[in-house]
Image (cartoon, rainbow, N blue to C red; front, top):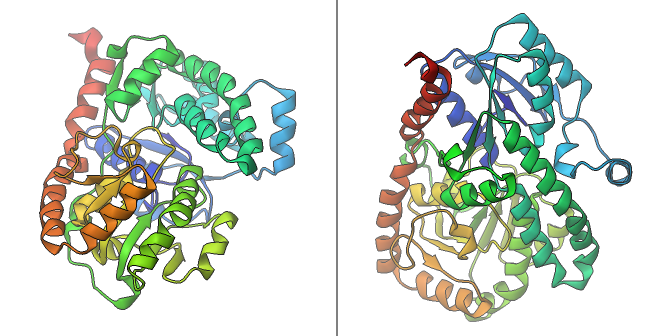
Length: 404
């Protein structure tokens, strides 16, 4: 299993999916894990070593803006395919493939797609499983469309426009190279099939999952984690930054005017410099990295998801629902989930809808209780233990079909 960061601690959507995928695979297979790491290379290994064999992690390569521009000018690969190109990781992968015999190599995300060639060359007997956390071409297209409406973001929109064609070609190549493809939702499956020129039946849907028990437990409630509104996510991730800035500009001032004591916590690691100005806004707290997000979810009255850019499915939605905090989301933010407005959550897309829905929900304790209960019941369908049969069936079909 190849991952773009260590799956533990699981503090963002990618690592959450990877951790529970790893647990599912380890139920019936011997698994070796080769990962990049953005932090201390020795941290987080012990919990992983209880599940699988952990190969020495490799530090994420440093890449400046100048590097990205140079790569854009000198080759035809998309940015996502160049972020994790690293000779040390290549050497580790080759060493693993030539030392042991693997039945399969599972590649977590398109950014590790360039290593598919090495697997084909040095582990030709291994089946390649590509786990697509997003439909990346569609994600980039949506980002470009959003940024195009803001003149100050036109350079970024132009960059996205240059990336779309490259991404489409690379995503098509990667999906066609894989022996099996995973998608997180039916909508992503359709988009990947269209880009890759493959039949939808070739793509298995394995939903994003969490450990429900970690959200159902009672977390201590203190003033430090108690807010009216909460947003969670990796805060240098472009869709999250866009969502928070849009909300702060178009919705937050009216909320504070109507309800001056309202508080809002933005919970997540690595706040982007574009968010720094929010620290001066009354009622807003940027936490940065926290040990656990569950106390903030448990301590919030409402979880907001004003996402305008996205693909795949948002694990933050399932985390909030499992915690029992009522959710207000854009339609796109809940894409890929079989939810209904007014049943498991509330939808809002325009600033006026957001303002009215937030004020109404904060004032209605009975509705919050109703949404909380429905949300917890819905989230229970996404416990990681439920994906084990899906993953087991995939590998049974992939590895043992010729023995039947």
